[in-house]
Image 1 (cartoon, rainbow, N blue to C red):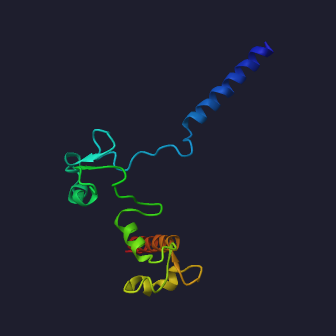
Image 2: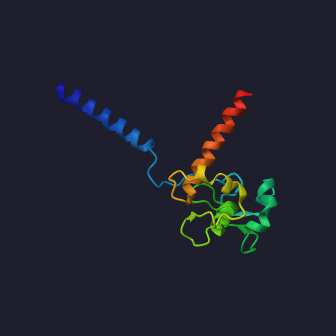
Image 3: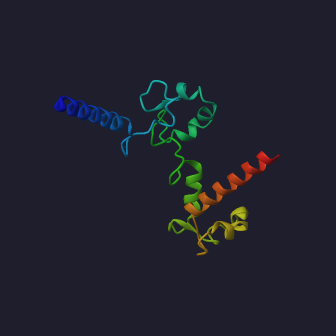
Length: 152
């Protein structure tokens, strides 16, 4: 009788562990594609007919289709988040004249808003702005604006 009870407990634990691990996403597992809704046939590329259903994608199709083959591949799609891609990432890369991954006041010449807020953005006071410092500043500002709108 004891062995049957122990076997039942063991099976219950094994099944519970299996269900737990089956539902836990594995590190590095593929995330659903950001443009999956636009890629209606699921072939991994967006053609003109698929882009036509999304006004923004349709508007920028010619610019995004870098090799002009009538299809936008994963590599050609705008990337957001992380180390930035798309237009913003390209502009930031152009500003970083010496390609050291940070921005000096000289590199930001003509960018009045960035220069005006330089001290506030430069959280470690090293005289340079990093993408991380800029992202943190923007995130904090978004939070402030959201709180101000809620008070109205």
